[in-house]
Length: 392
Ligand SMILES: *[C@@H]1O[C@H](CO)[C@@H](O)[C@H](O)[C@H]1NC(C)=O
Ligand SMILES: *[C@@H]1O[C@H](CO)[C@@H](O)[C@H](O)[C@H]1NC(C)=O
Ligand SMILES: *[C@@H]1O[C@H](CO)[C@@H](O)[C@H](O)[C@H]1NC(C)=O
Image: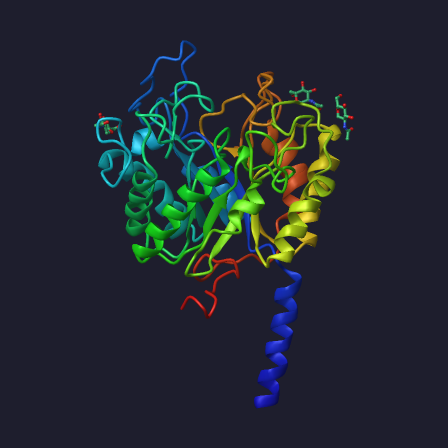
């Protein structure tokens, strides 16, 4: 009996070691829609009309991804200015109507479908003016900007949100989408305030912590004037009493890593080598929560190389491709150079009526990399379903 048990444990360990991608799926982008203003008019699209200006998910599309495509992860974007209206300020007071719409999407994904869900404040570490995201808005915690929300307020916001979801094991806290053009030390301070507040609220689930410079994987260990220290140097100081925080990485494959060009020409594996070595050296894990590419054969090899690389390197525990979501229509998240080739939303069509990126990129390229055995039970964690002994 004891021997058998030992063998089983070894066999399980071996199986576990081979499968390091616990979570895989798509980013749901649409909850942040409708606030952009060509004339930079502050307050455009706020609070916005749910179902008209923005929405979080289309439930039937989530059904397709879970039931047919067998994915277990969705990253759901929302705007801080809708969750915490400007009149209230950033913090623990929410617009409950808006929160209910968001919670309905999160609960559908996690409770009805049993998948995991990353909560994604899509705010570039800014609050108060999303009218020309990603460039407008006061940097959270910037004490030189009198209109800026404080680091403490960011902590209060996360403490409240995490507290509301503390009993939902399937939730993952993505602290912030793509901080950029700010002090890296402030990214760290804001991350730390959020981690502290989340744990204080009694929520033990997985946290994803971003770096500076759009949390780009290729530049994570680099620094230059205006981006110093490097994200890697700063984030080594991030402390999580639960040891359940992974690094949030975005990695695009076009010429300037922006994800805005149709052509791919950056090697994911080559560009991620330095950050992967850093993760390994420090026993850290990461998720790539944004990557993608356009339709056609030109990008296919670049996308599959990146997915294979995550599969091959145990530092990577999950990924979400950019992007599905109910509001893309024929527009393409891969190429903001205005290509109208559709999105990863099931059923999406290009403007000429031909199949959209769900058919041309998800089904043709990405689907093959969804691991056969993903994590479907237990608390979201860097170890896939269990907390490390240290934290429990
Ligand atoms: C809260 O959200 C609802 C629904 O979008 C909206 O009608 C209402 O005006 C919002 N309240 C505030 C204070 O923004
Ligand atoms: C990507 O394209 C740019 C601009 O055309 C070029 O300078 C660069 O060498 C290319 N990189 C690769 C890896 O092909
Ligand atoms: C992508 O899809 C559009 C719309 O169907 C098509 O016009 C275009 O040629 C495709 N691009 C490639 C590279 O296949």
